[in-house]
Every structure is written in structure tokens, then in C-alpha cells.
Length: 543
Image 1 (cartoon, rainbow, N blue to C red):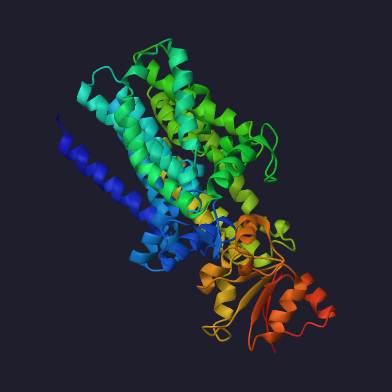
Image 2 (spheres, rainbow, N blue to C red):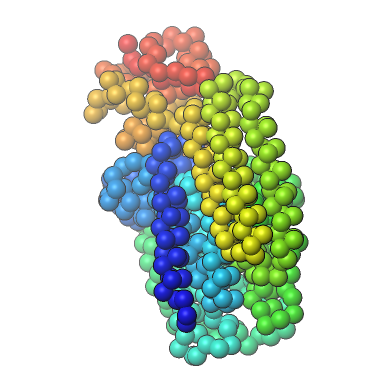
């Protein structure tokens, strides 16, 4: 193909630029409560214990999620050291690989220009960037599910030979198994329901006969089953807690206290897809040769949105697996959008960027007891800088559109948006320090000896064990530790009276708590000196 060498070189340079931007600031923010601290602590505990089967959070049994992210996080700590970069490496790498998968699939389905645009859209959608640079399990799940989706899209192409179709189906089965190891049964539910909806929409069920059920199930079981069997044998209560409490009860009831209105995910979708939200009205199946692929993508997005909207438990990142499919749909729609429509889209985005800059200058109006002036100032300056970078991208994109260079316009806007989101995220660190144990650990260096007990009294910061590099003893605190505390009661202290006895018996000890708890304890005769405090929490040492 003419120009292939030049095209490959340009794509390689773009990939290097994206990698530098994507991974460059990964370790520059402290981990915060609660998700980042929780999953970093789980991975670190697995590495230090050497037990790669039974997850423990702060030393207590923890079976809310499967183990894949903990394995990868522990491996990252082993290779890169115990730091924020290693802690966030898996979601960042998962996001980066998702972008590559989307780009490759778009190129194979609709040509290399569309593939490049699809990768750019995926790499710059706000929700993709944010979740790739924040430690949760959802970006890892999204990568695994995107592998399933892309493999299914490739496998249903009519021009494939039998060997290639089988290979893609095997990749889909492997992706489902990895998705189950990432976050449970949702790794089967989403692809299965999508295929049912898609085949009914197509009024064709022949694809089900080409699933390679025997070999595919063997691959999936070989990947996912060993850990589930091993953890169940070691922990007899695992299966009931994991499958019943953490799946069916979470979805069907409000036991986890994370309910939301039926429209909960609507603003998250609209904001999360920025700067490509304006393309949503362009997404439709059409009537050309690509209608089958578009229907599968729309079925995927529609099911995820409706499925989680109906759940009794909602969290913002639940709909993240929609976004790679949306990136493919948006890139496909860009092939048919007129330059005039794209210019109007840029005009709206430019006005939005100006509005953000105006609001950012008024950061003082947002100061409150929970948002101090220095944190508000940092966020305001970050938003101002991010909006300025974004507006430069809008102007560059507009210039490229005037020359009918759509791909160059998409890339300009995408790189500017990715940089803008990362700038804003970095500016969050001043505020994040109020929700991180990093400053606490720094202040306690002179107080901590190897055998000094640390208590968390009626309060707990998920990042505390990570930054202290040790477990802490929970006092009169349950929350998500209920299972572990029930099965290992010797690892925690259920009452304040029992804590007071332990405190008095220890030659030296530290305790983390709220100011209110400290006041209550002092009224009961508790003796301690303050070694760290901020607006939300205090750490005391035995005098």
C-alpha cells in the first residue's frame, strides 16, 4: 500500500507522544481515600504476605471483588517499588491498551483513518482519561470487556476464514474469563446479553453456532476457575458471600447504600464523553454494509446503560465499559459528518472552554470548611490552565477543518482534551491531601517504631496502611470489614473499653480518629498527645 511506511512512522510517533502524556504524571498525586487506598493496600498485602489466593484488606479477609487487579498491582510493586506510580499502573496500562484495541478494531472494520480517529476519541473521552489515572477496578474490567467486544466484532466479519474466526472467538472467551477475574459475573452478563439483543435485532442466530463452545469454555475455565476453586477451598464462606451478597444482593437491593435515581448515569454519560458528546445524535445503525457492527455496538452500550440504571447499587464508574464502544461509533459517525457540522461542534466546545475559564477565576466563591482556600485556589488554577490548553486544541482543530483535514482536527482536539483532564487531575492533589494518609505518614516518621501498634478508632482512612507500610488495628469500626471481622475476631477491637485497656497496656502506641472521637475519649479519661491533626482527623500518641 502506498504510504504505508510513512503512515506507520506517524502512528508510532503519535503513540509515543500519547504514552508520554498518559504515563508521565501517573505517580505525581497521592493516593486518596477510599478506592485508591483500598486497592493499593490489597495489592501490597498480597505481595508482602506471599498469599496470592486469599485477598486481605488491612490484614482482614476481603472477598468483595476477584483477584486479577491485586495480582497485577502486587507485581507492579515488585518491579517498580511501592509508590503511587506502581499503584496506578494497572488502570493506566489497561486504559492505554483499550485505546489500542479500539484503534485496531476501527481500522480493521472501517479503514485506518477511522481506526486512528477511534483511538483518539477513546484516549480523550473524559471518563476514559479520568478512570485510567485513578486506582479502581473498572478500567481493568473495561479492558477485558473491550477485548470481548472487539473480538466479537472481528469474528462476525464475513470475509474471515474459519481459522481466523476461531482465533477471535477464543480471544472473546479469554476476555470474558479475565473480566470475571476482574469484577465477577458482570464479565459474562454484559457480553451474553449483548449477543442476545444483537442477534434478535439482526434476526439471525447463525453466529451462536460459530461460538466454538467446547474449546471456548475450556479456555475460559482454564483461566478463571483455578482461583475460584482455590479460594473457595481455603475459605468455605467465600462462595456465598461473593456470589450472593456481592452480586445478587448488590444488584437487587439497596443493602450497599449506593442507590440513585433512574437518570443517575445520564449526566455521567454526557460529561464523561466530552469533548465528543455532541456526536451522540449522529449514532445510528444506518443501512450500509457496517450496519451489523453498529448494531452490536449500540446493543452493547444500550444494555450496559439500562442494566446499571436498574441496579439497586450505583457508582459513577459502572458505565465505563460503554465508552470504548462509543468511541468506535463516534469515529464511524465522523466519516459521514459534514465539515460544517464539525465546525459547529467546535464552536460549542470553544464556548464551553471559555465558560470554564470564567468560572475558574471565581474559585474563592467555592471555599468552605471542606474545601480550604489553598485547595480551591489549586483547583481553580488547574481548571484555568486545562481550559486554556483545551482552547488551543479547539483552535488548531478548527484550522485543520478549514483545510479538510478531519483526522488532524480530531487528533488536535483529542491531545488537548487529554492534557487538559490530566492538568485538572494534577491540580486536585492539594485537595486530595485532605483525603490521603500521605501527610500523616510523613508526620509520624519520628513516632513509629517497628513494633508500635497503630489503632484506627471509629474511623479509618483506606490509604493509611499503604502509607504506613503496615496494618492498623480497627476499633469499633465495621463498614466493609464485616466479613473479615466476623471470621477473624482476634484481628480487631469491637469496643472502646477494650481499646482503652490495650492502650494502657502498650508501652507506646498511636491512634487515628476524628476530633469528635478524641473529645469523647478524653471525657472518659483518655490520655494522649496530638502528633498530627487537620480539619478532618487527628493522630495521637501515648504520652
